[in-house]
Image 1 (cartoon, rainbow, N blue to C red):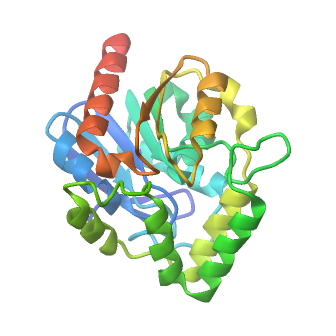
Image 2: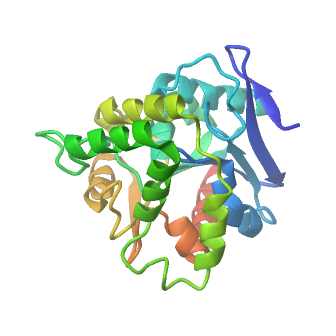
Length: 275
């Protein structure tokens, strides 16, 4: 079984397929490694794909608490240690992108590059960072999870896509089926992870990023606003940005061919630089 042992003695799940240059995929809030299904289908023939289930998510539920960004990042470092990973492209989506940022300092010697997908350094808006969700909206998300976790998750899934984006996709039924197979964390874990998102501010880390960084985002993202991706591009040295028009929060689902092509292109470019 693909389990690794972290520093707390907890067993956490990960998927590991393919061979060659390693790409680590980190999912977002309420999801699991299963959300990367299309990437495993499109990338595993040319790269080694590794995707953990974050603590409290997917099949990594036998944990002793600690759903905060320090613990998420420590678990990711422990995965790298367990698999002896080096020259990795680290891909983080949404909350996974924040975990990538949090762990980057400790992992930088093992990274060839980093991809921040639908990312933000701050999930909650403030006076000096307006490019995020209002606190009232985050509080509303929390109340919805408390009242009915599955209904809250269904509502969150609907917000992954821009108006008409999913309906206009030839893969709409397939994407809906994929999302329906992902079991959300229990209510306590969902709330703990959301609280961690709400209070985390990673802006102070951006200037310290030394690895080549690719920022990918949908132009119509309603969850991690497009302005946040532009902010990352401005404040991370060596960062490059690609915007998916007419896309929301999950271009790797609705625009998977273009997304896969961008990952392959970026991976090859940093692999050549690192050779």
